[in-house]
Amino acid sequence: MALFGGTATASHGPDAANFTVEPMDRSPGATDVKYGQIVVAEGGRDLETLEKTTAVYEAGSWASCGSDDGEVLGIDRGNTHEGYETDESLKNNVKRFSAGEDVFELEFNGESDFGASTHFNDGDAFVSVADCIDNPDEPGWYRITGSTTGVTPDGERVTFSSESHYFWIGDFESEAEAREELGPPPSEPQETPTLTPDAGNDEESGSNSGSDADSDDGAGDSGGEATTATPTATAAATATPAPGPETETAEPTPTPTAAEWEGQVVQTPTPGDGPGFGPVVALLSMLTAAFLVRRR
Image: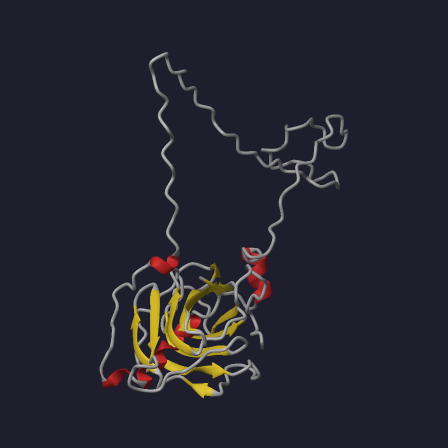
């Protein structure tokens, strides 16, 4: 698939979709920004009937999205086109949509609904362009999480989920400048500082091990590399009285595990169900933000 200038494309996990996001305005806090999104299905499963797509952008907002905000909403069959070209528009396939602060959801016509249904095969690209998204307030690396639900040719209902490649937000001229200021996106291996023993008899540094770790002078004038010791986190040991003959030791309370994002409820939804929500849902183009992936 075509990759967009300024879009981080490093792998971020074994997802079943190649999901890229391109904000057309990357200024922190900008509102009603045009975003282009492409989700290429790579899960190895075809959906004979596409039922629903959901996108979650916790750092940004979909709250301003409406029926007239979608410029492109469709499918590039086989992912053969450049940019945001499509073979099939989905604007007349949308049954309803809802847009909130964090969550955007688009529901398509099923086989039993009035109106045309559609399919989404492995290798197809879901394409959308919409100009209603609000950027995060702070510069940084961000991504959108999406899921897609549909019915396979053998009648099984499945849901795929995926996270987009990281994209940058900030007042930078290019991705190279963003990387210089922000560091690489979290999807890329981070450099781990290596603690090098400091020679205690170094005549040029004039200090022994650990003496200049907190000093601004360090070894900057010696021509050598100044080494900054990285403190190692040490677990604090808490003494626990040994139980007496008749004292039972309480079992530790398990720490709850955070629920997956798919469990979230659409915030401040504005569901539409009337004649005005046909092509209107094009707006849902944002929906594309959420496509195919890991089979549930």
